[in-house]
Image 1 (cartoon, rainbow, N blue to C red):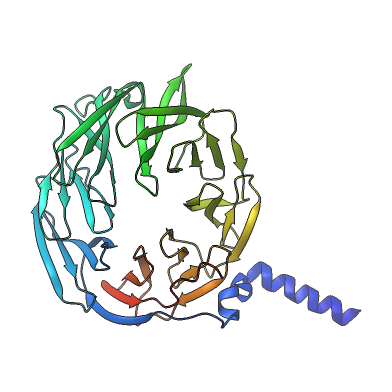
Image 2 (spheres, one colour):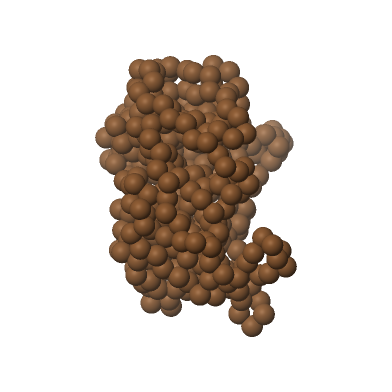
Length: 389
């Protein structure tokens, strides 16, 4: 009995103070390893993405007033190069999706950086102050910002009491439609997997208190429904393809919300939520930063489907719908999981440095990694068509 108790005590101490000992990745060998195709030094990287034809697209800033963007072939050759002159560094915002980068600077101008090396200015209403960007996979997208309620000349003005405007633009930056949300301050937005609807996180004033909310808008500019969530601040949001269900994530809770507004399920994972990825109407992936650094998947009732302890804090999650794989990235590793939680492949032991960011192609064939040493690493990923495992 004494030996048994000592073994149990040792295991508990290892679990409490050396959680990596129990990380499943290092203890398992039944997984594949991506193969490095090429590595290139790219300084001052702003964003990395992979185009629809699996070419890495890198946006970087070589000087204070210039943004360069380069698309490489899968063999590592330059396929297209472009450059954009910035009128101001102030309020520089950017977001990239499948090779198209939407960049906004100075708060009152924006441009599309295309993977073929061209750029297009985005038409903005006069007086609009850009607050955020949300590109789509086809190269078009949406800008959101204020048209009233806040002015840089009057910093004491309250943006939450203003009017937010949504501007939907096409692949050439031309306005398709705009929609005003009076009394709402939009703080974030994300398109559904099919790009049919967008979920928007909002702030408003209710009886003198700041209230978070969620607004679901269709690709044609129709407001489907809204829901107030109380005083908690929403950090990430997502919606189903038809807009009938949405997800909102705070630092400690996740809310499932249906269009009738009455069926919300709250889930608390017991630690700070670092990332969320919408997989389907019945599957949500969460990265929880706690003592155990767990990535877990829950269903629409809030029940855990599976979980996996990683080697460290998660930098990002990415769901690849075509490949049916979930990627979890830490500073030392990139994990590729099947929908059922099986570890399909694992990237570790980088040539040098640690991971700053990683993104995979939609079909799961390739992976681009940004390192702390100022390099971009491009990999071929094994095990396609493994969703059934």
